[in-house]
Amino acid sequence: MDPYASDDRTGPRLLLVEDDAELNDLLTETLAEEGYAVDQARDGQLGLHLGLSRRYDVMVIDRLLPALDGLDLVKRFRSRSVRARTLMLTALGAVGDRIAGLDAGADDYLTKPFDLDELSARLRALCRRRPESVEALRIGAGLLDPATRLAVLPDGTRVPLSGRECELLRVLAARPTGVHSRADLRSRVFDEAAAASIVDTYVYYLRCKLGRQVVRTVHGLGYRLGVL
Image (cartoon, rainbow, N blue to C red; front, top):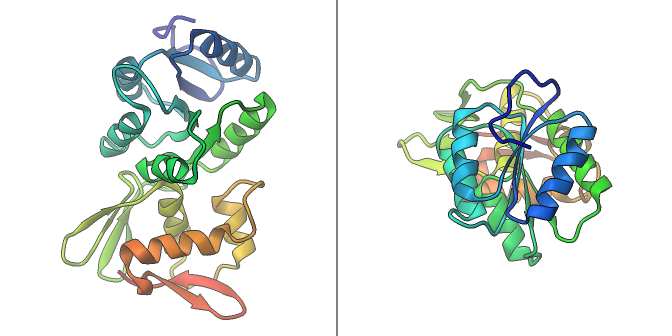
């Protein structure tokens, strides 16, 4: 498929950046049959050009790419306020590799080899989790900017967040006096396959980056927004 194809296609717009030609073509054909309008790139530089010049709903990016590594590609997108949900593909399945991908700004991470049905399900979940707002949200004397995935502390320090860290904090900040159960946060921020403890894990990540006061525990009920 020509990456510069006409933009009159319908369906969610998807950018696929994968250097394996056979896999690239297979995924393009499969995802197009599921209704996605797919643009493809086989190196990070073309992927960067397409991602910055067009608007996408979701991106699938290989971790190991020629010209520009997948991690660097995602970081550049986030630094330029590209908000498309991103699924990273990789043959690197260690926990540290998955954490690096998520911290770079990816929303999900799938290890090769993978099942096409699982990939499709994860993409559907990402499309359902589009941000409700791009406006900066107050957190005490600080700010959360969902567009850039940055938390701005009262002293002006800018702290980058992963996609899921940002979304969890955004959901809490959208209703600052409300108490959210773990089940509610899990369903709104994470996919159906996430472990039951995933919310606690990401609350821990936020507290490590922004201080223990950023999320308050309401014993027996769940969590609520704190302050920066």
